[in-house]
Image (cartoon, rainbow, N blue to C red; front, side, top):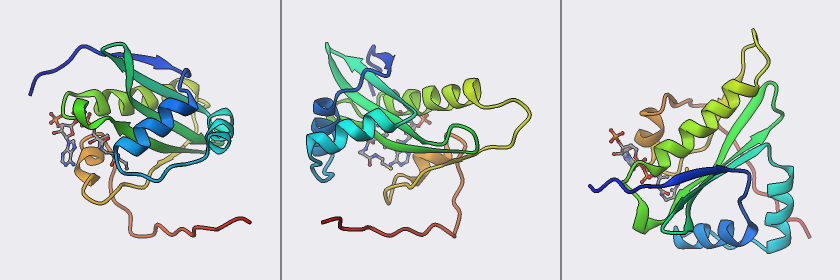
Length: 139
Ligand SMILES: CC(C)(COP(=O)(O)OP(=O)(O)OC[C@H]1O[C@@H](n2cnc3c(N)ncnc32)[C@H](O)[C@@H]1OP(=O)(O)O)[C@@H](O)C(=O)NCCC(=O)NCCS
């Protein structure tokens, strides 16, 4: 498949681009004020720019010392399969390696959508059998 020229830019992700990319890939819509707070409280984010627009994104959340978690690794369907997702994850991993305390053991996690596990395995992640979560509805 054709490899497109794209640029990765750190920490410019807007709530509008976040919501647009989530919707384009079938995820639920989040309210703008929730996304703005999530982006503000996150550790780091990266946007992939191509054809003058944001076509991919990835985020890091966590404590920046022991635990980092990859979230919203998303490439717009029209731009998938061109190496953008891989570059986003690698940029996030580079950021972790650059900012983590030296001589420490750290934990980098993610929850893969079913079927995307091989994408992450190629990038050094492996499956664990102990993942658990709970979705809370806040009134
Ligand atoms: C998953 C996703 C981010 C991958 O991004 P992408 O830009 O299409 O992936 P890349 O082109 O960078 O692919 C990198 C490598 O992973 C492989 N790959 C990508 N998706 C794969 C899949 N579902 N199964 C197996 N391999 C896959 C590619 O073939 C490529 O292999 P190579 O390095 O040997 O050439 C993208 O498909 C996407 O946004 N999907 C919808 C949203 C989503 O589900 N995100 C994941 C949330 S956990």
